[in-house]
Length: 87
Image (tube, rainbow, N blue to C red; front, side, top):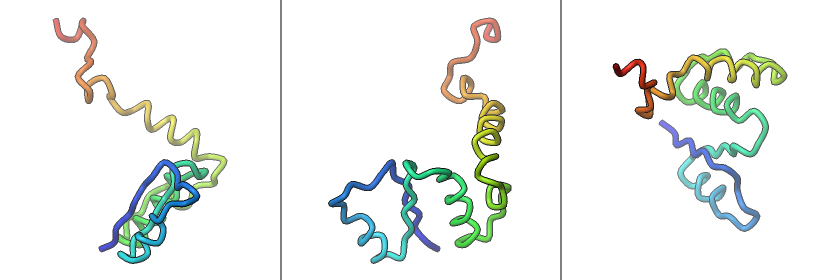
């Protein structure tokens, strides 16, 4: 097993990279371009998990993620279902 740490960004004086190395972990910064693809690569390396993002061109990732997020019923997940559906 391995630890995957996902952060917004790493400050210039942060010790987090050194600390991650000490536990043989990986840090992925969300401020870096196409970080979801980096997560997919790391999951493949650690767990053998295959995902489309691994082989996807970076120019296609934004559109792919937008399309996939449209499928997620966010209102249902956070309890904001449409009033008409409750009636």
